[in-house]
Amino acid sequence: MQLPMKITTWNINGVKARLEAALAYLRQESPDVICLQEIKSVDEGFPAEAFQDLGYNVATHGQKGFNGVALLSKLPLEDVTRGLPGDDGDLQSRWIEALVPAGDKMLRVVSLYLPNGNPIGTEKFSYKLAWMKRLQAHAASLIADETPLVMAGDYNVIPEPEDAKRPEAWVHDALFQPESRRAFRALLNLGLTDAIRTCHPEKGVYTFWDYQAGAFQKNDGIRIDHLLLSGNAVDMLRSSGIDKFTRAAEKPSDHVPVWVELAA
Image (cartoon, rainbow, N blue to C red; front, side, top):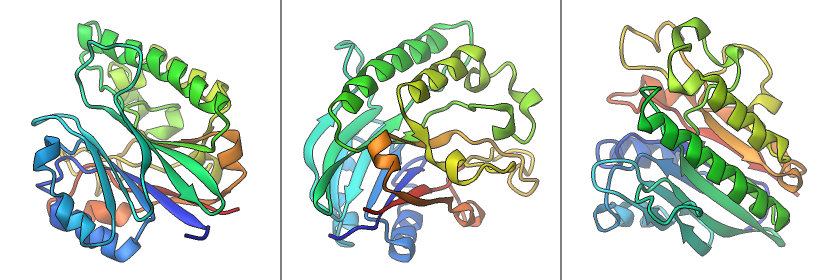
């Protein structure tokens, strides 16, 4: 596989419910690697064969009815690791990482599904912040390894006011709390770069639209799906984008695919 390579992240909101949409997207856009979140399937129930028929290697970290992440790659998946380190008692399936050959080097790709955290003031918000603290520690170790790193997924964080059409509507939501945003900035301060914001500094750039109240038609969205790149991966960054067209399809996910293209 020669560079450039395209890496996409997509919260699919149920892989079985969106299987045909996912397969149609892969046939059309043909990313080299796609990171899925909220597959809502145990590993043995994941429709791996349908993706393998399109030429993808499949690795999953599933959970019945909730959460779940997957990596699909046209390239070999090596050193697959499931689960975010730091809490052996955490049974939620929210993290999978693997090494993928990228030209003459290896690339570490992560698919992550960060906890939502709502409602604030409950153990769910505490779990979100504790998970983000573990994420920061593990991200620091991955960066120190010096393998180019792409951490892709649904972070459930609105980083800045311009990442929401109506930021005032989110002030009591876990996605926009000062603590959540501070933890996200701490990730960036490790030396990670927000690829979408780097390539698209303009306003009105969103990745999620609620199903209610015609949010998509009004472009009343938020940006919570992110691709964070280590410094040596940013050196390879050529472009990034958001495939908003999938949100207009029949029975869509409320998230859309977000991608980067990397080249030597």
